[in-house]
Structures are given as structure tokens and as C-alpha cells.
Length: 433
Image (cartoon, rainbow, N blue to C red):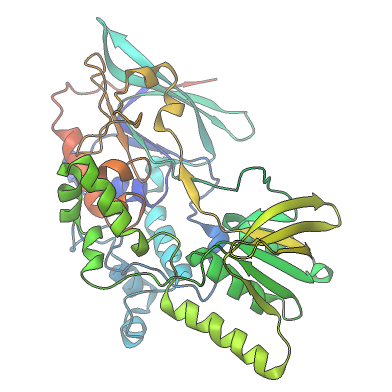
């Protein structure tokens, strides 16, 4: 088996930032490999709506907060693309999401030699010597099953991201979607399959963006937005509130008592969860008001409401919307229903098999994470397991699954790995079955 200092599972922005940071160490660069199940780099491709903008500053890119002189900055990408002056003239900190995805692809292409795409990690097993786990055996398989590879590594970096969440009892289908798949699904619709009515469920940024996108994409369709709030809530992106995403805030959050952590998560949830940029809210309101004036209302809002019944069939979706304030029930027939109901982090130990029992947990049953993002294990496990981008909000705060700190976090994880007192890896040939 070929040996590595670190193997990353998943290759989204977090592990991309790690690969770049490791490569910038020069002669000290660790032997690294990343395994990604997608056939090519992609980050929320299904939500790359043309006019959707980022919610974080371009300065919070893959490298700038860690190394402003890096060649992988967003500004260098603009320079290489011949758009730096035009971007400056645009006077914005928030680029289009499509453009930022182009930047991520540009960066990923420069480190593709350390990535194997079209690989799903099948198993992680301990390699034990004298009762001590000093390395892990990682087995991956290609999508068609024709290629199976096994490696060994001293450090495992789990960057598998989040899983789309649907309400209990709801199953995705050709007519019932999660917004993650929006653009892919839209592209599969034929020109003669334009919906007559679409229902969007959710109150956050994605729900508002999807509502506006569908309203514009299908100019004859009725678009119904269902959410439990009275109206869309604006995101708090004021300067003081944004400090909750600062690198220094991670230290303060991590060292805080558990009750204070819960208070902070509650106080500042409106910086990230179920909130919408003010510009998007105003745009939807203007559309709704304009339609009232001209007497053709295609954009409908069911606020303080929820979906209580949904029946999916090959010919359409029947659902019932209940008012939370009056109890009134409104039946609707729709051609499409899009749930913008967020994501959920998986249990990071699911991939670890028997190793999961070696991971320490807190009183709430959550995996214990060190300040350096290393999973706390029993003393017999000397090899490192690190979490990237998911499963650390309870320990490191609101920025754990966002772009805000990925550059700094990559440096912290690398520092932790380099401080481990280990002997050099011996190079060996990996087994291919």
C-alpha cells in the first residue's frame, strides 16, 4: 500500500484549501492524497443561479486570511482571467456565486495531481502495531466498481460536507426536489414541460433565491412560497455581528462553557440560518407588488404556514398547506415542489467502522473535537482523525461549515499534523484490485 502523511475524504472548498496550504510548505509539503466521489470538482452546482451572489467577502477565499501573498487568491484569479479592473469598478465585496465557483475550479485544477476524482471511500480500517493504531488503511472504489485502491495514511481528514435534509415522510422524486439539485433538474425538463404551478418550501436564502429564479424562469407559472415565519427575515451582516465568524471568535467559542456556547449559537443564528439578504427580500416584494398593480398575481406567499400533506404521482403533486395561525387548510395541485429545507451534518464516525468506538464523545453524545479540529480518541489511536466543514459547530462555532475560516483552519490542521512526532513514511506500491 502506498503511504501518505494525510488522506482527505472529499474535495470541497475546505480540503481544497488544505491541499493548497500543504503545497505552499515547499520542501516540507507532506505526502497527501484526496479522494472525491464526484467526477470533477464541484461546489453546490445545483444552486449556481446566474444572478446569485456570495454571502461572504471575496477576501475570505481559499488562502487570503492565512497567506495574503499566495498565488491562489481570488484577486490573482481575477488578474489571470483579465477581469481585475472590471471587478474593482463593480465596487463590491460579494462576487457572483458563478464567478466564485469559477475561482474554485481554477484553484482545484492547479492541485489536481493530489486528487483522485470518481472515488468513493468504502472503508477505513486501523493498522495496529504492538496494540497501537499508528496508521489507517483507506479503501476507495470507482463509481462503476472497476477500480478499487487501498492506501495507508497517518492522518485522515474528513471533509465530506453536509447531506440535504427533507421533512420527515418526504422522498425526493422527479417532481419533488431538494434545492441542491435545482439546476440539474431544471435542465432535464423539456421545453414542453414548463410547470403550471411550483411550490417552494422554506424561509432561508436558498428558498428566496429559488422562488425568484422559478418566477423568472417560467413566466406563465404560478410560484407559491410556503414558510412558517410572517415574512422572510433579513440576515444580520452588520460589522459587529460578523465578528462571530472571525478566526479569533473560534478560540473564544471553543473555550466557553457549554451554556454560553448555546447562548451564542442562539443569539447569532440570524447571521446564517433561515435568513435572507435584504436585497433579495426587496426584489421579491417589488415583484409581488407589481403583479398586484397589473392584476396578474403569479407570485403567492403562504406565510405562517406549513405543508401537512403531500402525495406524489406521475401526473403531479397534491399537497395541503395549513395556516399555523388559523388552522385553515388550502389544497394545492402542483407540477413541482422544491424543498429548501437545509442540510444536516452526518455522524463523522459512520465512515470509520470499528474505529468509531475509539472516538470520545461528550455528555450530549457528540464527538469530542480538539481545538486543532482533531477528533479526541482513546490513547491506543495515535494516528490523527480531523474534521473539516461539518460536525464541529457545537465545538468551534457558527463558522465551522462556512467559507469564512477555511483558509485559517487549513493552516491550523497542517500545524497540528506537523507537530506529531513520527518517523518518515516508507514509500510502497499501492494495491489495485
